[in-house]
Length: 204
Image (cartoon, rainbow, N blue to C red):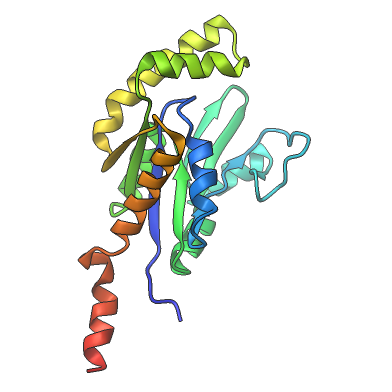
């Protein structure tokens, strides 16, 4: 019998800080954690799986979902649109899952307005120099892209004050444990356990 309520977690941080790696680690450690899958209008790339990497839909389908209130937030990058579908998130929350949205800061603000009790965690690099080294180490961006990403990162880091918790990713295992411990601890606050407490008292 499901005794825990679902919880929504907004997980943000600048490009190159290690969000995906942290998520992979914590998802392997807790069966109640569920990574939200985004919608996208871009073409599916080789090796990607519909429903796991993204929900791949047409632009017309995307815009209809927005019109019908079935997209929590969305943004356009170039010719492609990305967004968070509402139905799966609500379904997982109802099932008692802890749903994690890897999301940029503007999208996180929109989600907070819809789910004010959502937990928010910001993953911070130890320094801008280390973040720059990590981005350069990937070897996937040219100099102009690197400078643009670093400028965006500075603005995003300034928005970390909007988040409930900030975790520094100096060591990937330690950062992952800290994120997971925050999520676990929040699941046992009085406010979230109130329903279970009422059930216990009722059976006395």
